[in-house]
Image 1: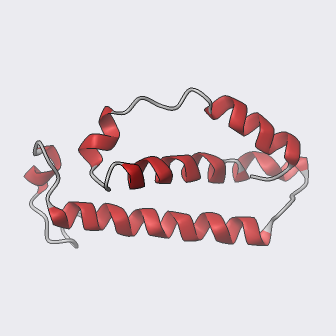
Image 2: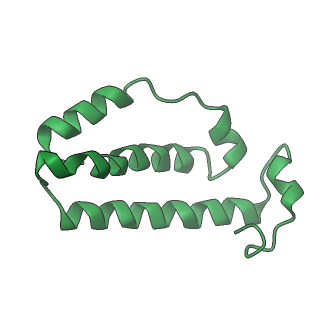
Length: 99
């Protein structure tokens, strides 16, 4: 992906992400959002026996929001702690059968 975006691998460790890296991250985040939406469209309320792998959509959605808030800068994303409410959100999604 780094080569495809025309980035120098050293840009990954730079103090601030170059625009090309932020664009790449934004593109990946957009793809993740589309895949989560498609997953929810295809399986709006799956059986509990099929729910566990679909809960990854809940995790992905939360990470994409964090990526967006960080301006698609991977360095700023890495500095943020994981949100403490994720286990509760996963439990609620599982109980509601809505990943």
